[in-house]
Image (spheres, rainbow, N blue to C red):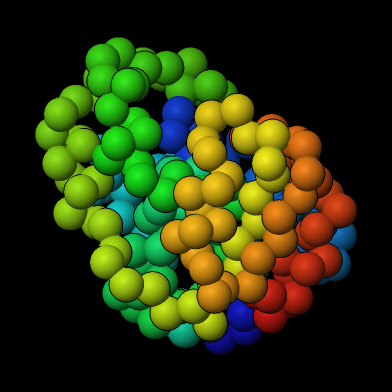
Length: 189
């Protein structure tokens, strides 16, 4: 199979995020629209992982994971479990801790769908924590202006991995368009 990307979006996000749309448009312009997979991930962590693993099962090692925020946390677990590469964009390094403040009713930013985020979901996230990383698998892309997550946690967690640390920006990773070529190169596209 040709190289492909499995994009894992963040908490309360969807395949309609601006980064996914930009990536899809760019790949379509190159005649590679079929190389991008981005499921609407369940708010329940174990179901989100199962959704991703179904796509991994179809593609195997020709797949590169791209995870944004909570998707970066999932991508780390999946990269280590399945021996895949992963590009992480402002990843949630300690998701069970950082998402604890979101317990209760949440609303998807793109679909408007409401859901309850529970203590059980936090327990599920803890089960996906990875104690040790394989540095050569990762490309970390962070902005110091991330207002949601402390970029320094990601820099420390992914020490020894290829890193792009950019001044300013925000949690959405404003420099994404400028670094699309590096991302696609990392993904083998």
